[in-house]
Length: 171
Image (cartoon, rainbow, N blue to C red; front, side, top):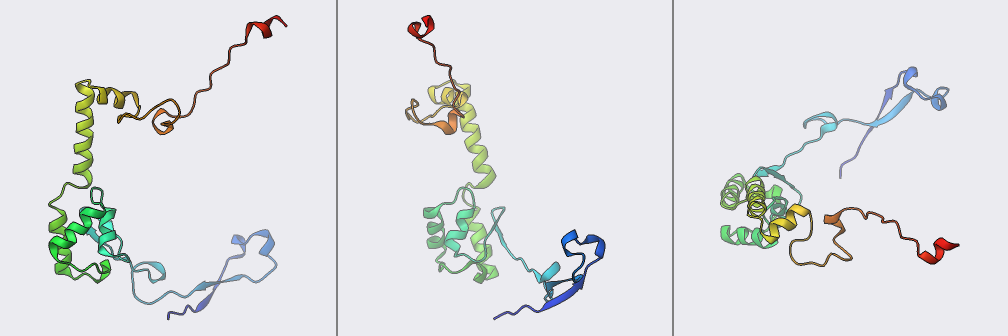
């Protein structure tokens, strides 16, 4: 179990607030660990696959899902294709990481996938089909009703002033 030792650091009186001026002029901070990168001994190592840094402390199946275009079923399929155990990402060897990168590189992910989808939507708008027009107007595309919901696409409600009835205008 790791323990932190406390170190007293003197503080200049000008940097103290008014409420602490009359008191002690030192603060307790954790002692920096030896080794590691940066201040305080933080050591960050992430595996980069498909242009994305995937988390180290999760299992490979869930870490792969941080890549746009790889979901639950595709990450399981990748692990089955490579005959990998679903171990924690930081426990992967260099050879396993290299083979994982090659396997993930076979799929359309991240920027290529986003570009593909954007071009497909632009084509629909260009040929002015129903779906393209709905995209252009910012309305639901897949047949949802618009009377009550779809606030995400339509935006905030615009309040409409109610018309006064003729009976209330006479009074």
